[in-house]
Image (cartoon, rainbow, N blue to C red; front, top):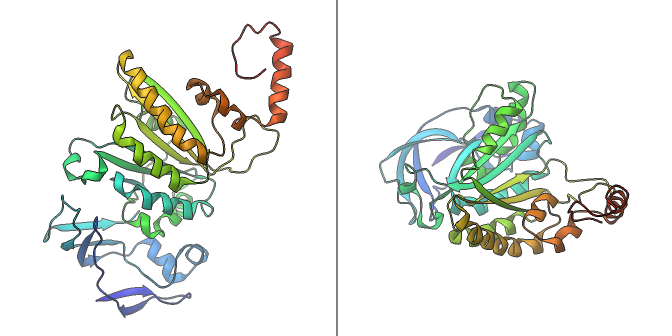
Length: 333
């Protein structure tokens, strides 16, 4: 077939004959009828600084298109041959749980190249009822929700911060970029709180540089979660380097939190037991923990990960001075 290819690391695109790809087990093959030109394509044509640092050469471009499905893999159940589909590779997305390893590896590859003003979050959430029939069996009725929030002063700057995501092949199939009105912090916090759907919540957390292994552990444990409202949230941290005298040893590029939610008190114990099993599996790859959630889940042995030794001694001295009779419960001193 003919395709536009970035064949050389310089300005321009080239029409080439390329092989027709074979769809993988979870993929479809689309015969393209019409295609659009995206701003990302212009970056690739111009071979600007972003393209040079993001795009592998050679690569076939064209991620905004409409066409029809002509073949699909063995795991595809909700799409069929002859069906008209469109694609737009781009910053808020929903995708089956089974795709998470590829998404995690893509985020790991991009992490060091993303601007610190871009907040990337991946939540593993229950599928809405209308989407559940479309999921593969391995998805266990869950979706991965990938969100990227650009902290910018205008839309042009926000688009620039988002651009590296569109250049990662593993993300192009699941990202859906949309332009929205500027949002304040209240809007962002409200969006985050949408994940908390039950009145009773237990949580635990690690920091890690080994995102792929963390996602693998989550996928092993999620099928046994006591409730669909048990939701993991992965956040790419924007400041991986910290001073040696900070109170928390927040070392690691990714925060992996899980919120085990329950409707009634009788469900607290199963939720806590499942959460402990999950984080027992995650602790060997942890580079740090978040002390508040560590306290909540009663892991005093993990507190060494949360404080530098110098800060532990300083906090103990402060407590001895202000609370000599230990009237207040706490992990230090």
